[in-house]
Length: 80
Image (cartoon, rainbow, N blue to C red; front, top):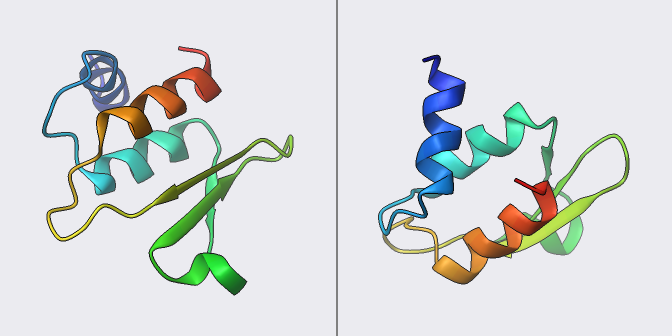
C-alpha cells in the first residue's frame, strides 16, 4: 500500500489524533492548494482546487489535532 493510500485509509477511519499537517498532505493528493492571502492568512485557512471547490477551516491550535466536525466536513467535500 502506498503512502497516499495509507493516509487516505487513516483519514477514513476518523482517528482522534489526525494532525493538521496530515490534512494538508491529504488535500494536496486531491489537488487542493492552500490560499494564504487576505483574511485567510492567520488561523483561518482556505483550500481550493482547480474546479473552484473550496474548503475553509481554522487551523487547530495549540496541538494541531483536527476536530471531528472538520474531518467530517472535509470528507463530505471530497466525497470519500
